[in-house]
Image (cartoon, rainbow, N blue to C red; front, side, top):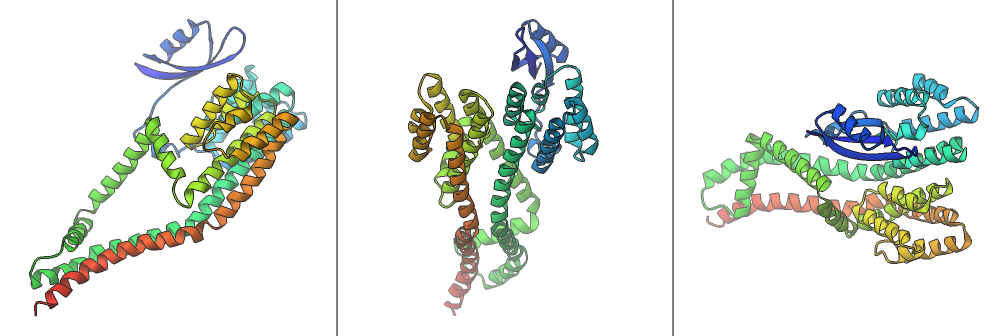
Length: 402
């Protein structure tokens, strides 16, 4: 018995997604058709123990998605049929995963499926936001504009992520270098000092004993350290992925950390308002736009807030009223949304909010290295200081005996 995910159509032509347990794909198909549904896609849900490595295999870079979206928009605006446009792009795409996906999507389109429905079958390449923008463009006859807008969204999000990674590169390199120096000291210099301690005799301080034991493990049992570190990383990753409550608690702690907490809040607000505004301007309904924009966020605290906002709006509250009930979105956001609702220019207001917080994020990212460096120096200083004290203390104690 295995778990299968599926996409199907009902009698009204509506797309239905779900998952079920079945012995094989044939039994899964029979179960779907028994519900008066027409299967579009059936896939077995599998998870490898090396998922954190294999998830990177077959990855489509953001730059490839941007280029694909812009080129497809250009071809469609030129009046070239979608299926032919896909075949043209198929021959030009270098990324293997994207090229195979384009080939499959082109086949689906020739079989009569809409572009958005076919793209929905490949969530690792085309996420919910992408599919919704395409579906909106298909419904409104503005597919080329929706694709161009989607390209801009991907590009902006990629630039945001790249700027954060760039700001953290220098501190991470320094930290890795210092860890390397400490590891070298523990594996080569400390063992030599250990021989001196043995010749001198006497009782060693607890910190020195710990240092010598750590040195022995690094020198003779280094493979155990690698196994333990990999095991801890995999365990934490699995726990955070599987347990929503633990993930929520961890993300809540991250939002309260010095330096990074405020930056994470601003990043989540920027991503949400940009996505929400783009979806609304494309004609997506408020509830659907809220749900999709919430799914694009990685922080569980903000995702939970968006779910609560969506429920409040579903029960009759205005968007501004729903936002005022949350603790993590600033009150100014709710007030500006209120103005947008009253004037009928919510998407425009959301664009202004995004622009404001984007500038805040850019300013914080530029100062990130200078803010992190003092904290980094403290951590490194504590580590080096511990080694120095652990080495000098017994030597000083021994010399006092003579």
